[in-house]
Length: 353
Image (cartoon, rainbow, N blue to C red; front, side, top):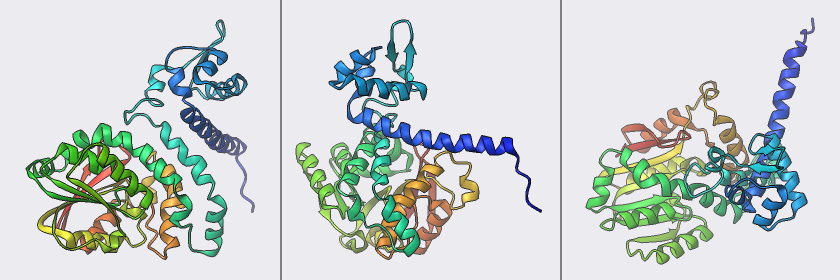
């Protein structure tokens, strides 16, 4: 007997789905506004579409249509009497500035990942994946833009102090590596803050390493260096006191090998600090996580597929705490402490060999 359809429930779900589509369009418009400086211009005060276009140096007709979408989406307010559009300060702080509350840079992942949809669809049918080379150099810029403010705002005063004994070790002088360092901003910030320690950043992307070296030179750092390296070949000697892995292990083609190399490269009293996406390793639990749909989607479109493209494990962004604990134990870390990060999307794993 066919199941009887609850029409009201179906209609509610259709509205929910259309909400997803609306969010996709609005995300693209946030990206456009961010790249064109429209939010910075709007944060200066209420303006008509013509005034805002003049501030940003853009065409008024396009700005007017852009405002129409973002006003009806609830991002801007509109004064019918004056014709002015306003960006509330609580919205402006999330779309402008150098603090980690500025989430506008994340919007760039939407059009970027959209470019690989046909290749992901092929991989879903035929297996394999989309290689990392297909995402570069744009992905390097996106990751730098998304994480730079987080590091500036929360690395030294948020992430590091939450790991017991870590800042004291860095202050005293330690040999430190960051595996999968990207553009090296975290390394450079730590090298400047802890001059007694020496830092090396390893990354497979040559363009990212070039940016890391340029920033280190600009900051006048003598205790930071960077190397292009597949971190499955991380040197076992000389031994390291601290190894960091910021948002990188789940992307690896061979994450188990990377964790084992990290273990073997540490001194007996060394420390492995891994910052990753907060997950449970169980989709039934992840439904409680408001960030889960985004990260599962990013995983499908990037993190998982770049691993599978290399014949790798395809852990995925939401590999989660249970899998992470197991893999760390298998790599030789008998005890793992899981620590809340300064931002709810992440978690910190502190492990000793």
